[in-house]
Length: 276
Image 1 (cartoon, helix red, strand yellow):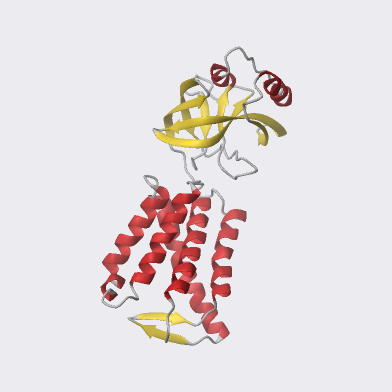
Image 2 (cartoon, rainbow, N blue to C red):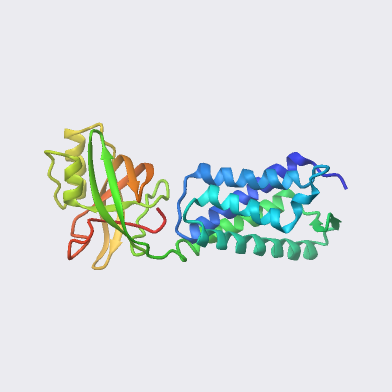
C-alpha cells in the first residue's frame, strides 16, 4: 500500500476544518476562521507525522489526546469544553459513517499500524464531512449554546470608547446576515456615548441616513430581527473598531442599537449571544 503524505495532509486538514466548523455552529460559537484553520492544520500535520519512519509511537492514545487538546485550544481557547465534546462526537460519528459507506460500497480495507483504512476516494470523504457541516448549519445551529452570565465589555469607535455590562443570552440569536457572526445589542444611550452630538430615535432607517449624512466614515448596516410582539423589523447596527468582551479583543464587529431597554432593572446595558 502506498501512502502520499500530501494527500493525507490536505484531506485530513479539510475534514478537520469541516468538523470544527460544524462543532462551532452547533455550540453557537463563532471563533475566528484562522483559529479553526490553525487547529485543522495541527491535526493534519499530526496525521502525516504518524506515517513517518520512527514516529509510529505518535499513534498511541496519549499522543492522540495531547494533539486533540492542542487542536481544541487553538480553535476555541478558553471556551473549549462543549465544542470539544461535540467535535469528538462528530469525529467518532464520521468514523462510523465511513465504515458504513466502505462496507456498502464494497471498498477494500487495509490494516496499517493497528488502524483500519478504507479505500474511499477523497470526494466521498469530503462530501461526508461537508454533510456534517451542512447539518450543523441548517438543523443544529446554536442548539447546545447556554447562558453565560454577565460580562464586562468595552466598545471603541474612532477616538470614543465606552464601558458597559452585557448579558450572555441564548435568547439573543441575532447574527450578521453577511458573515453569520453574532451581533451584540446595546441600548440607545450606549451608542450615543460613542457618537457624541448625535441622537438616535426609534427609526433604524432614518437613523442610518442621519449617520451617513453627519459621519459618512462610520460603517452602518440594517439587520432584520424578530422579537416577542415584533414579527419583523430592522435594527441599526454600527461597525465598532474594537470590542472587548470579558477582556478578549474582537475586531470587525457590528453592534446593533435596541429601540427599547434590554434590562428592566438596569443591571446590564447590552446583550450578546453565547457564540461570541
